[in-house]
Structures are given as C-alpha cells and as structure tokens.
Image (spheres, rainbow, N blue to C red):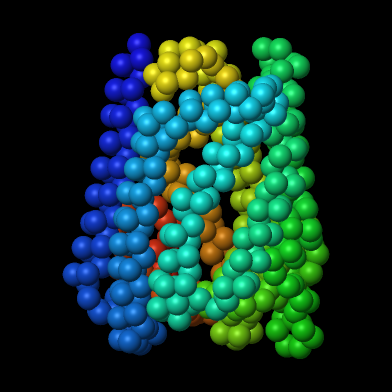
Length: 416
C-alpha cells in the first residue's frame, strides 16, 4: 500500500509540474514571438515603448516564476522524502513536547522553514525584478518592518487558532472536523469583517477621498445604485509599489479603496466606471459567493483530513512511525496541490465570469463604456500587463479576462 501511495503522489506531482511548466513555456514563447507589437484593439492607446516594457516585464516575471516553481517543487520533494518531517517530530518528542504543544510547535517550525527558504525569492522579486522595471518603492527598512509585523500578526492569530484546532480534535470525538469547520468558518467571516479597519491599517495608511469633483461624482454614483458604503478611501500604495489597483473590503457595508497610484492616473469618469464595476461585484454578491465556495472547499478539505488522520499507510509511506494530526496536516499541505491542481482553471473561469458581469453592471450604471475601456487600458499600461497572453495560459491562470477580450466584451454591449 505504501508503494501505491508514493506512486500515486509522484504521478500526480509529475503531471502538475509538466502541465504548469508547459503552460509557462508556451506563454513565454508566445510573448517573445509577439515582440513589441501592439494588439490591433489597443493601437493608439498603447505606445511601442510601453509594449516593449510590457514584453520584457512579462518575460522576466515568467522566467522568475519557472525558477521559483522548480525550487518549490524541489523543496516539497525534499521535505517529503528526506526524513526531515519525521526527524522534526521525533526531535520535538525528545524535547518533551506532546499533545497540543507538539502539534503547534511542529506546524510553526514547518511554516517558519518555508518562509526562510522563500526569503531569497521575495528579496529578489522586490529589490531586483520589480526595481528593474520601476515598480519597487519600498525601502529595506520598510520591507523589514512589514515582515516583522506580518510575523507578529501571524503568531498572534495563528498560534491560538492552532491550539483551538487541536482542542477540537482532542475533545469532540469523531465529529471533530465538523466542530473545527464551524470554528474556522466563524473566524474566517470575522477576519473579513475586521480586515479593513484593524489589519490593513497596520501596513498602509487610508485617507478619506478628498472633497472635490471626484468625490462628488463617486458619492452620487453610489447613491444612484443605492449602495451604502463605509466610505471612499485612498491607500498609500505608492510607498511600496508603482502598481495600481482598486478594491472594496467588507461583507455588508464595504469600504471602497483606491490605490493612490491609480487615483492620480484616472479622470473623474474613469474612476466612476471603476467604482461602478466594484459596485457590480457587490450587487451580484460575488464576494459572498466566493466566500461560500471557500467555506465549502474548507469543509471538503477537513473531511478528507478526517479520513487521512486515521489511515496508517499514509504516514508509513512518508516515514512517520504513527499517525498524528500535525503530520496529517503537513502531508496534506505538501501533497494536496498535486491532487487538486486541475481545479485551478475551473475556479479562475468563475472569477473571469464575475469580472464580465461587473463590467456589464458598470456600463449600465455609469453609462460610460468608453471611460471603463480607457480605465482598463490605463491599468494595463501602469502595471505593464501582458498584452499577448497565450490563450491556454490565460484560461488556466488568469482571474481576470485578458485585456483585449475584456474590451471586446465591453464594445459588444454598446454595438447595435
């Protein structure tokens, strides 16, 4: 049975590596062949220099992704087959740790190890790759400060959650996974509610959108849509990056957030079209639907975990002398992606459908399809988005439609 388990994992792992590597190479080749050409739908809106920089940025990020992915795969195989995980478990046992303390320590050490191994890639991405294309604005001091805040926040939230998870496992019998599901769902909903006002401000400053024509237009648009918000805010994204974006956060009365890098680039009607798009997400309950999908996925994962934790052959296959919850979680985390990677294009297809729906709502509410179009083009220029994605790659990986496809859909809404 152990050989069957190992064979199945390696087969799925190889399939995932092959598919994702092939898609990345196809995309890189497709972009390289396109050169500095501007798609016909964008001629006159994207200049040759921007197209050239977009191509170079896409190629650089794609090559970086290939190296990062290969390293991640090597780390996964090393952790699973080198005896590191059983050795860590045995070492914690020799230190006298048992029960909840051993469970928490094992997973905390594994998480810390992953962060340390990924650190060189994070530094390279921020201070070399992003800096090369003029996006990085973060100083080493601010970067370190953010990392320390993230570690402290992760410990403050994560450690109690881990102790709570073990408590449900140890005290609630065979239905422990259902109790844990209810607990984690409550925490997830609570975090969505608290994030905008308690967590996000730890890393960025949020200022009310100043009085003026832009605020007046956006507030009038929200009133027309009967859309109650907790305010319109500008985030100091430019302290860290030159990328632009906008989002809303919250479940019932969300706050609308514009990156300052975006607010400076767009005129009033373009910003209104972007806000109408965000209102469209809310009106169609996209955030709520995605939360439900996430919760259902969490339920399925916990059910599978409840089956695995009592299956000794799984632990024997990877060198553990006996089953344990922390080993089951570690193995599920390291092996699970190989068995679920084919779900990514299905999830992303749903997300792209949501974007099309929000665009349609924006056109109907703001009545400015041309402004929505130019806003999307400005975002693509500002972020040096890929102007020539391979259709298979975008279908697998993209959460938003490719720009040309999105523009064609907007034009289709207004054509006779």
